[in-house]
Length: 123
Image 1: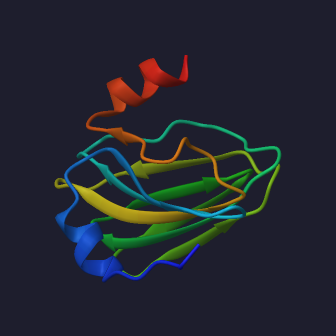
Image 2: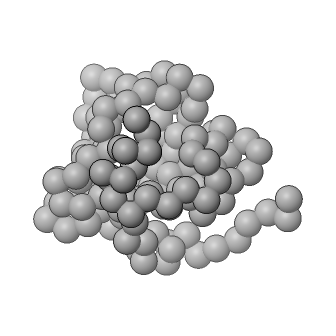
């Protein structure tokens, strides 16, 4: 693998898709996400995956087990494997973020325009 280079802020701010995998390596994955106003990822737990989230635009809440954190442009959240979590867009516009999974969580090249499309693919 030759590695990967991009302007992650530009990519994240221009992303209109709910989920877009932009790079997958053997031990990590970079994914762009956009949550519409009022949208959430949904409560979930990754038993084998650590996750890093960085918000580039918008505002929301991160729920990690029994803790709640405010999110805004520049916020970062680290979610260790086994942590029950949810990310909720509480703003009036889109919330744009990128996330890094270790190890990869989604098939390489995954592109899901909407949360409904992502939910249908997951179930």
